[in-house]
Image (cartoon, rainbow, N blue to C red; front, side):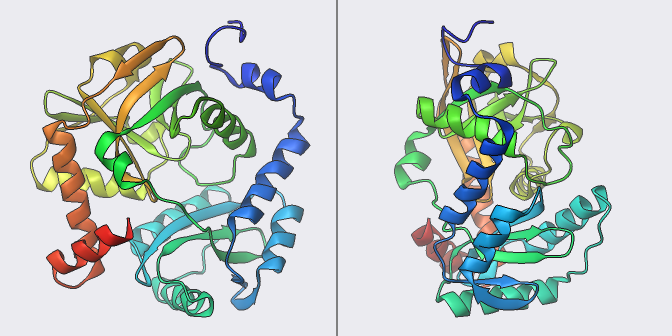
Length: 317
């Protein structure tokens, strides 16, 4: 399909528009990581260091395994789940994980204290002989986005190994370009069967007649937020279905939402798929119930009285 009309759908069409070679693309992604780090202190192999050491590493190293964990009032959210996924990622690429929840929790505390920061996202980055922990300077969806929803595009792309969380410079560059060019919040990925699997950095859920629908686990990155959403749905008798989602069925759903470390549960207002725009109900009752259930899950994890923790959490977002 020609890229001259409508939105680009494939890697190849976007590649033609961007005109970058692989090395330039990788360097741009690495520079983006440097720019994101606005904090002065990082942890490298257990030692507190100036952020310039991290910048030098990210510009000189090849692909890496990583995990992003949200910190709220100094507490890493769902740390045990993230650690389990990190271990699975490292096992999938033939590496061992020597972390424990206790050691990571202590490092989070040191990083927060050294930077005077209590709430942000922390990225753990692992190369063969180097481990870094760095604040990302995350930005979160606005109150208006949670109320009114966001716009999403569709990109024909597949994670080669969705079960492990490793850097994918090419996919990130293509997705970022499409997002920036069209003003999207995120892009959905459509696989070789033209089925929607996940987002470029998130998971995707749809709702039809009160039933939450999402892609089967084997075809997506097993997001921690996704895991918790599934758990609260099952515990609260919100029907959930796991199945392939053909691209042509996007128009059949009542509502949809994004899930992830930064967006939590974020309503989708519309999907722009080439020349077609599909609009969703951001006030769908099931969608709003899932949002409330997930907020309560966060509040419960934070430890104190649920109502008080939830109020503090809402102030942060």
